[in-house]
Length: 233
Image (cartoon, rainbow, N blue to C red; front, side, top):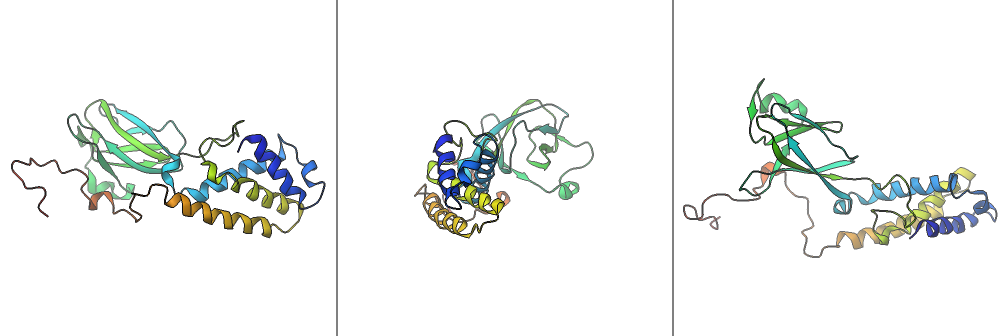
């Protein structure tokens, strides 16, 4: 839905509260604020279901003897961090709790290929301290929807979820005007459930279970097939 369509649909729903409710809402002020709040709520409801929709990446170039790097983009969740070594497949880096740091490194320890990291705010710290400068890591993160509503509508949310936005915005308007928002929230919940069912099966070949942690699975077996029967369990 475009920006104008979202505005007009929300105004129609607001008129269900009283005939002049829609007319009292300004397109560029209070009505737009309600829509932005609603968009953010829809994103929050869908991230746990289809994180891949909101996925983005940022590459990090290491500098020797420097273990902290600020991410330039806003993120809501870190999906995973991968490292890249010349001639090798990408490998997932373990994201540790800073409280575990004493078990991972000693003071001044350096390493060409750090295999762990931790976060403080929007800063990523590599463990151990990098000893070489190179393009090394890619951070996969969950990005929020755009903070401003473009003319063509939401930039990230799939179109199937757009009808949720005016429903939730109408519930906020009802709350502001002292009306009962229950009917709008009930419609929102009903449609959200249908949207989730479709998006959960968006990729029909994908397994639908919680993955084990990075330390509990081996993504790539780099042993020489001449020396090992890697197919044998």
